[in-house]
Amino acid sequence: MTGLVRKATFFVACATVLGVAAAYAGVVSPGNCTVGGTRINLVGYNAAAVGDQADSLASGSKLTITIRDISNNPIAGIPVVLDFSGCTSDVKVGSTQSYHAQTIGCATATVQGYSTLNGTVSFVVVGGRSAATIHAHGCAKVYADSYLLGSINVGTYDQNNVSGINGIDLSLFGNDLFGGLNPDRSDYNGDGTVNGLDLSLFGATLFAGHSVNSSSVLCP
Ligand SMILES: [Ca+2]
Ligand SMILES: [Ca+2]
Image (cartoon, rainbow, N blue to C red):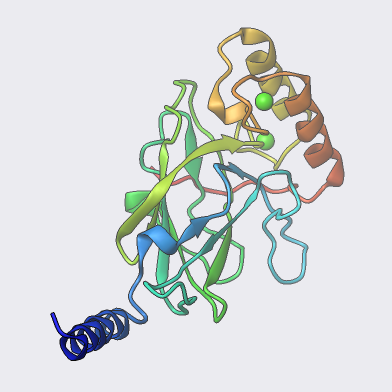
């Protein structure tokens, strides 16, 4: 191959790569997206709070996802969905949500938001425990524009979906703490066991007083 031909081949290859990148600019590239955690802990809310009422300060309650294209550029306006349909044996999302502009798809147990100008979208999800059958790890799925980005574990501070998070929830959490089954719903720090560290996180959420209300209705 002559030098001239080699150069021509190189420029054609570069143009092809650039053409592909241009063609997919603004299209979600799942491998370049980031799910900023391995779990989300559902919370209550404070009806008297101004603005976003969901308890975003509870440990593990906020999950941030970053959406990028094939060139690793952030993309705005992409629908991002958390699908909790695999968690409903013991944890369910509330029929109304109160963090940013999140919307609820009750029939599908999904919560949706949109990526912002920097490509990120953060979720804080109101929900609670409705039954006792332990859900599997990774029960919730994260999708961006229908691309699966990954699975996350799911906990809930509200253990009975009544009156926000209070001493009754502490008692129910205690059953998980001493029950020996280490259910994911009460493993707030995600280390695989339910122990004193989770009790500490529960106590911090309880005494912070940002989860004083429960969702009035849980999704199916
Ligand atoms: Ca409660
Ligand atoms: Ca734990």
